[in-house]
Amino acid sequence: MSSKITIIGAGSVGSTIAYTLSGEDIASEIVMIDINKEKVEGEVMDIEQGTCFRDPVSIVAGEYEDAKDSDIVIITSGIARKPGQTRIELTQTNVNILKQITPEIVKAAPKALYIIVSNPVDIMTYVFTKISGLPENQIIGSGTILDSARLRCGLSEHFKVAQRNIHAYVFGEHGDTSFIPWSTARIAGVNVDDYYEMMPGFEKLDKEAMLTYVQKSGGKIIANKGATFYAVTRGVCRLCSILMSASESVTTVSSMMHGEYGIEDVCLSTLALVGPKGIHSKIPMTLTEEEVEKLKISADALKSVIAQIEL
Ligand SMILES: NC(=O)c1ccc[n+]([C@@H]2O[C@H](COP(=O)([O-])OP(=O)(O)OC[C@H]3O[C@@H](n4cnc5c(N)ncnc54)[C@H](O)[C@@H]3O)[C@@H](O)[C@H]2O)c1
Image 1 (cartoon, protein in one colour):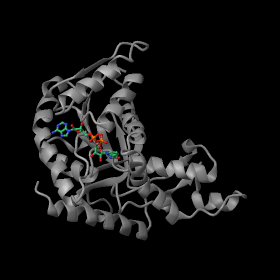
Image 2 (image 1 turned 45 degrees about the horizontal axis):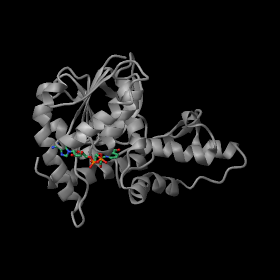
Image 3 (image 1 turned 135 degrees about the vertical axis):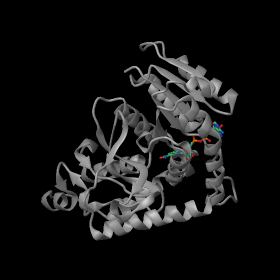
Image 4 (image 1 turned 60 degrees about the vertical axis):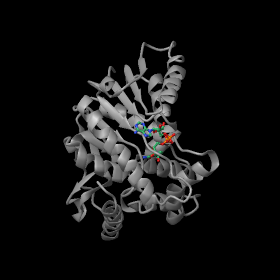
């Protein structure tokens, strides 16, 4: 694959994405941009010096104009929460960074597909959608890709079956109001509840505990090692590969809602068909009434944050 990918933010997430891309065949050109020039130059040198055993790939620390003709731009820039800072204050700080970056990167790469990773990712995706002026299909929030991956990991451990045989998703906010639409969760085409019934020898699945595992994994990893970056990197690199493929794939990403499930003017994750033109469409998967209600609670929580920030 011969694509150009620009990564904004050379912190733990941005650098791990660049490093992972440098070992795969998704990108032939990688540009990294960060306000911290020493950091980004150090990361680029370290990554570049490990690329001699693969086909040539270009990795540079650049400025916004170097993002010209990028196929994909990944936004990971942001500031971590400081002691005493509220979530809303942090959100406004990261929104302000995004507002600073957006005109410059969009001017340089108006045709790129944008993957938003910075948190709170649904709010950042919403703000980027509002201020970038780009068509919505070009804007993909990484949303609950990571949460759905955590769910598949947890279910795979519980049912002792390969993750590729599990089709189960996390919907809504990438955060506290996310939920698992269990009615849609399948193992090799079999509903999770039926699978448990028909397969002897498994402990009954504690669905609440599984949701807690999904929601609290990020906090636990941050408490243990300071940041989370490996699993999200795998999700983002997979998304890059999907965007560079010949046909669409199904995944949970955050994007603008336009009346689906009765929700509009907010970005959150549901199932979407994603491919070379970005978001092709959302998949109107049938949910139970209770699940639709949970999605609306998630949308309302995000809308209340949007109401408190300065766009
Ligand atoms: N969506 C997800 O699933 C997910 C998962 C993990 C982390 N994240 C988020 O990704 C973001 C990055 O996390 P991290 O651990 O890499 O943080 P980090 O602090 O290690 O890196 C952030 C980088 O952004 C840079 N930056 C700040 N302002 C900038 C600006 N104006 N222009 C360019 N660069 C700028 C900083 O210099 C720093 O290098 C955070 O918001 C984090 O919460 C999202």
